[in-house]
Amino acid sequence: MNYLKPGVWALSLLAAASVFAAEPVSVSIDTSKPGPVINKDIYGQFAEHLGSGIYGGLWVGPNSRIPNTKGWRNDVVGALKAMHVPLVRWPGGCFADEYHWKDGIGARDKRPVKVNTNWGGVEESNAVGTHEFFDLVEMLGADAYVNGNLGTGSAQEMSEWIEYMTSDSKSTLANLRRKNGRDKPFKVAYFAIGNEAWGCGGNMSPEHYADLYRNVETFLRAPAPYRPKMIASGGNDNDVSWSDVLSKQLKRQTDGISFHYYTIPTGKWEVKGAATGFAEQEWISTLANTLRMEQHMQRNSAAMDKHDPEKKLGLFVDEWGTWYDVEKGTNAGFLFQQNTLRDALVAALNFNIFHAHADRVRMTNIAQMVNVLQAMIITDKDKMLLTPTYHAFEMYVPFQNATFLPLTLSNNREYALDGASIPEISATAARATDGKVYLALVNTNPRQPADVAISLPGQQVQAVRGRVLTAAAMDAHNTFAAPQAVKPAPFSAKAVDGKLSVQIPAKSVVVVAVE
Ligand code: AHR
Image (cartoon, rainbow, N blue to C red; front, side):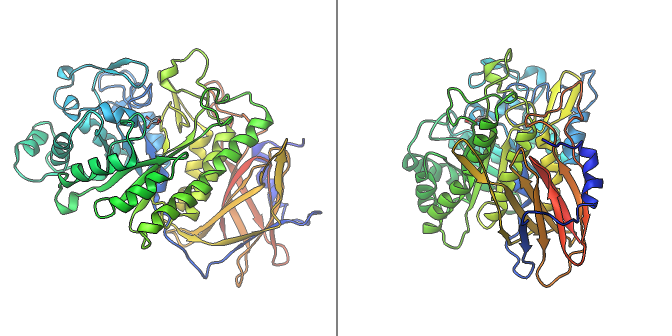
């Protein structure tokens, strides 16, 4: 295998407006037929009270020696701001259905200590509550997605929480919010009624959940400018009936239905596969499993189309990402896993799928933001590193609120191994808010680069400029000793005789502006 160091790609690719032996893959972007806007919230994040996802990883408290603002780590917040996080979902997850919001307001030293029964049985201090969460999202310049408690909560508890957060009146609850330091209402962009009602949220049927949802939603009244989008907690990869039943029964009372799908290398929850040190069989199985998101989006959109052909409801993939065996020596309830180049490709492949379904998929949340599952950031005490997944999110920033452009992919080969087979190149294009056309390309083949010819019919393509993320090993990752081992490098190419070709390195993600 002929690997180049990432920094060398730029030079070699400038020279790579070249003549290739094999017929190149062809990408033709049609700028005359713009599609829907790719909602920035597709790039949403998820922060649950789970392991060090919040405590330690994000929140250290105002008295910590780790530099912080209002208790939130400056290093982590700074890095998240740089990747333009548009939306954060909180407080769970399964945790949401045991969370009582009144435990998390008022003086922190007087808040009740609970047991986090979902995640490791550890003590939950409630130090992070509603006000702290909004401090975080407001520092990030992000919107808030609050997940209500249907499991152990009630319509009254959720309706009071909405009033506490959103009322501009002089009601007792709004005044309590003021007493706790916040005069103006908080902006809640989305509010979900429960989580995984088919599992940790109560083991219900979709019909039973639909009845409960209708009842609760009736009482979640917020003044017009502060009314959140209401989300019904939907199904998972095993069951499309939730999208069917909920879109039929709730369409006048909901703005969208959620969906969860996790990528597991083996496809088996009992032995999921390792985050690092895996064989090529688990490289291809992971990417093949993540590409199933396409079928899930098709099937769930089709189920919703039956009852909502105008596509008023959103399909909100509010949990997705890789789920591996936990790292040895860590608390199994903390879901801590390493994050490699493979995860960056998983993220990019999912972005490309979500873009293609942007008419229905208007919000998603990767699980999770820091230290949990497919994280953007890993911390250890005062140290922090950015994962390959972070870099994929940051490279795709131009696609936030961009307008989808259809493209035709021809001569695409299959990357195959031991009976498994997936397309070698995945691509997506959009016109960004800066007016430029952006193209993202993923080469799933860990052994072979791919030659790609890029064209915009009716227009001259002169050059492409952007960045590439790749590395020598399939499981390349950043560590505290080598935090920059995997990071994007410049990537560009110029047209020769009016034709533009690039070589996409093996196992890489490329995002370029097309000039
Ligand atoms: O993201 C971890 C957990 O996965 C969430 O709490 C739950 O909703 C899902 O099962």
